[in-house]
Image (cartoon, rainbow, N blue to C red; front, top):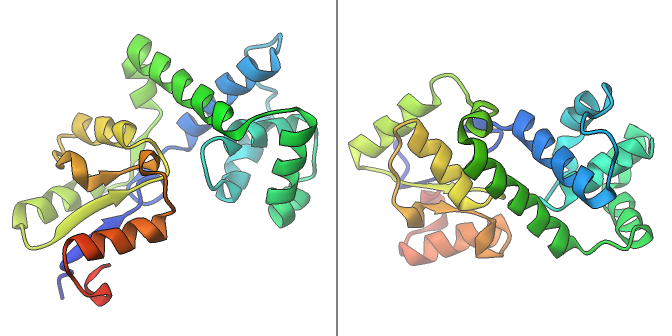
Length: 198
C-alpha cells in the first residue's frame, strides 16, 4: 500500500545531524558564555549525543551544553529536562528566543563562510536519498519534510544530494507551530483523511 501523503522528520529519520547539532550548540555556547576555550571538554560531545532526544526546540541545545558544563547529572536531565532548562534560563537570565536566534545566526555565518565543513557534518542514512528520489519520481505520494530545524537548512542539505522538493514541502521551525499542528494543516490543505497521512 502506498500512502497518499508521507510526512518525514529530517534529523534522525533522513539525516544524522548530531555532529552539526553539537558543533552549532558549542559555538553558540561559547558566544553566550564567553568561554576562553574554543574546544569543548572531551566528555561533553558524547554526553550531548546521548541526551539529544530531550531537546524539543533549537534554543535548548546550547542550554543542554551549559547543563553538561555545570555537571548536572545525565539522569536528572533525562528525567526532568524541562525543569533543568527552565532553571538554567532563569539563573543565567537567558531569553529562549534570543538564544535560538544566536544559534541560527551561528549556523548562517558558518554556512556562508564554510559551507563544505557545515555540510560535511550531516550524513544521510544509507538508502534514504534513493528512496526519497524514487517517491518523488513516482508522483503517487505527496512528500513533506517536517522538521524542527529551519526549513532552509534542510532544503540546502537535500539540494546538495540532488533532491528537489518544492519549498512548501519542507516545513521547518519557521512555521512556529508544533509538528502535530503542521500535520493537521497538511491534511486540511490537501483535503485528505488523517488515515492517508503516514
